[in-house]
Length: 623
Image 1: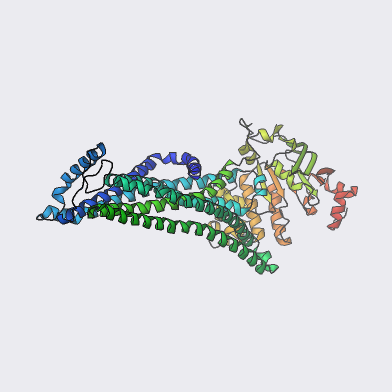
Image 2: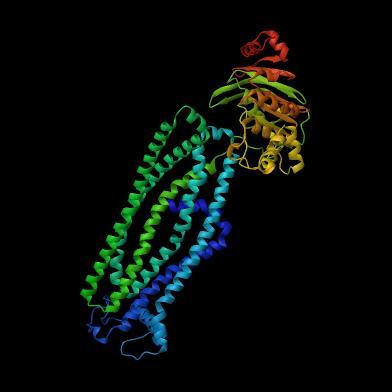
């Protein structure tokens, strides 16, 4: 019940959006459960009418507490209700059902032929409509939930993704939501219909024979205990399986992203062995869960057969009528299926609760970068961006230390330094991917933590070494720079980025789909698309983060000419490991161990003979 409450509490806000269809599914499920009890009455009545009079035994007076069939009992309140109900139902059904010793007419032929088909058709129709309504609601709830998980992941800061794995994110969006979908589509329908089926059949059996029904009820605790124990085993197995699935998904992402390196170093066998080891762990945990789930069936079946044995002994001892035994046996058979389904539902809830915990965890994550409740709106960039005594640390590891730096409007500033000196961290803080540990980054005098994130994003464009293109058409990839960009603006941006000619040579030109990660394009072509994206954005602040570091000399020449065109009339922050690309900068800032150690023009820094000059000398650049 704890798992059920947890799941229902979690999904209820999503259910409320579709409450009318949900209530219809619940009502139909209740009707379906109640309809099962009709088969107990139908079987008892029809067989009783078909039994010869000789089958009725002589009655012997018994105490009022005994209510076995064939006995004369005191007219207690229960007996009067039961007799009145039997008389009313029999009075309605008598003209339509055949009976031994009575000539048959057309109505009895129709009734005898269609009684069970009509009951089964009505029951099946109600069950279909109820299951469809629940599935309709469940599919939409899971779709909404999947979108919300994706939206949450999109809104989290880079700090979360530096700790999380890609496989974990994929599993939460796909695997965990699929598990919940399966539970709601199938399990929630059973959660409504099967309890009502059990209650309705129990009432029918109670009316048929109270003593025997109370004896049967004793078996239910015997069924519940092993179901609970096995459910806990299934839960532990499911949690272990999910951990292995996350690791395996992460390895698959690594394989797809690093296939060239894997093949270049001959790492296929090592990757296969690692994947096989994880698969064996997943297999072992899956079998544990499956074993716990399948053990429920023989336990319930054994107890059900024991109940039928009890019925045979009881009926023989009481010398009950044939219709009594047939009706009660029908009820027990019908009772077996919902009990079995509820046991399976318990196992499903135990497994689903693991996925729900993971989804709740991701939805509860808070971005370390939060927009101010009343953000400052900045329609345009006017003066400068300032780093004021900025200190920043990753997991208590200092990266920047009390950095003071100003980037004035229209100025082109280069940033140089050894690897790990904090160059890319400046970019992360400018775009507010992170917030400073101490100090502040200000734009036109406003702390970035007070500025509307949408305004800050609109004022900046990024071209980085990590070239990101999407599995969209060429035109759609360029248009990612600005929502609503026209085709004319897209083509103009491509021409400015030296990309128009190679785009026209593609099979479908601007409508060519470039594949996942742009695998159909060269590195230089992908970079020119990212530059075209920056052109179409037309932002006043341009950030270049090692934009040509991964290109060969020919591709670099084409990309560099496009970058120089892009830099015109913009404020530029250019980070470069290849120092020759900084020669045209107005000013160069040199970082070492997170501190600004040198500033000045390119030629001046070479003449000073400091850290910049030493770095330039290693690249063959002389004063």
